[in-house]
Length: 207
Image 1: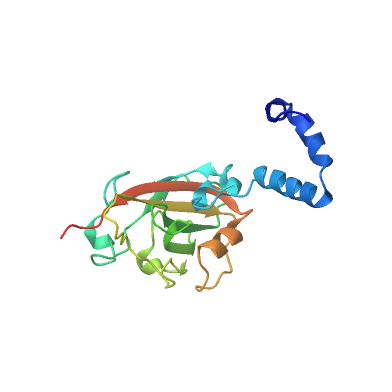
Image 2: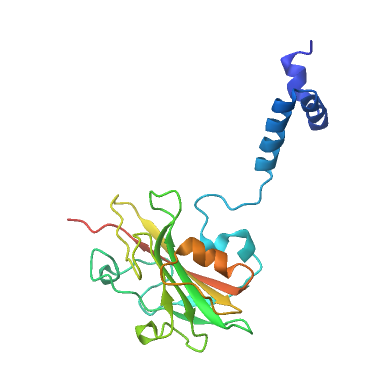
């Protein structure tokens, strides 16, 4: 019988051959494990803009007169304050853009997936920022299960990062307002021409 040391130091090809000598049920489990290790599916907690299908999208610039890159979000835009939607602006849209979509996520939340604070789509590409009253746009469900914006509301006292992600699409989407982040990401697949992101932070107010 070969020693444990020799088995561990044998080439990978030898170990695969040895696995083929296992019982059928054990070999099937081996194949499933190998497939899982090589899967390209996005890991839990992946931001929408970091999914594999977004990798080749043209980069766009996202700014806000109320948010500095990496800076704190004002209390008025949080659920601790007035829960107002912060203004957003953008530039460098790709040619052929027919609509825009926005997803705002917090990957520092205690949920398995990033907490969704806002989803919106069918924003007119002719606007250089969020239109007044979001005319013509559709707002989907946030992580609270409600339609529209839900501002930052961390309860753990830690610094949270909020990713305002903009997507330029080559089509308008036929999603209903009851759709959420996952439905939006699925509907955008194959239609993303460009993406941009603005990062801001928030911490639970003291007192």
